[in-house]
Length: 201
View 1 (tube, rainbow, N blue to C red):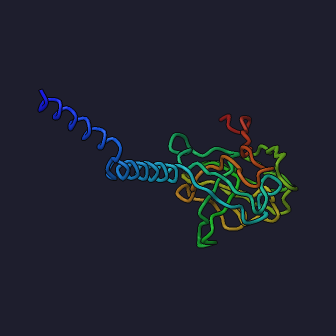
View 2 (spheres, helix red, strand yellow):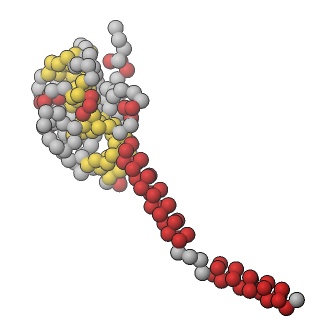
View 3 (tube, helix red, strand yellow):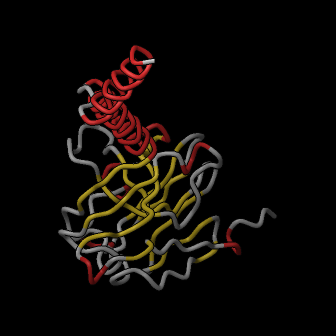
């Protein structure tokens, strides 16, 4: 009887001791799992989005220098870029190593003209409430396949398609979605559809 009681007591003591001083391995395992999960989330977020700073006045009054944006890199996986979208792009022809931000105006296959202070798509004038003022230059371009004509909202102070030509589709980084800095300016980026220009004759 005593030997049985002694064995039971020893077993209980061992169990209590194990619970009181757990090993370091479970803690390390949890730490590693947390770090791996954080890394996976970071990689996924950076694959589908990007964060960019506006570094010029070319998109005023829509966007101002020093503002920070979140850009969707997957927006155009499901549909082509659309007129009125504000995009971040790699400048073609070695214009700059810093990405630009512009608005899509002309789509593949369209004839785009700029004259008399207006932009004309296939002979139809665009109504653009977002620009800083009417353009003072002239443009006449036919947009090729997989190309886009992009302009800054600050039309007369922007390095864009009226300066360096059409933008290849492959140079589009993504669609600007959200402005998150400064805090008083946070909100969705306004994109303007033009259904009257998208009706084919």
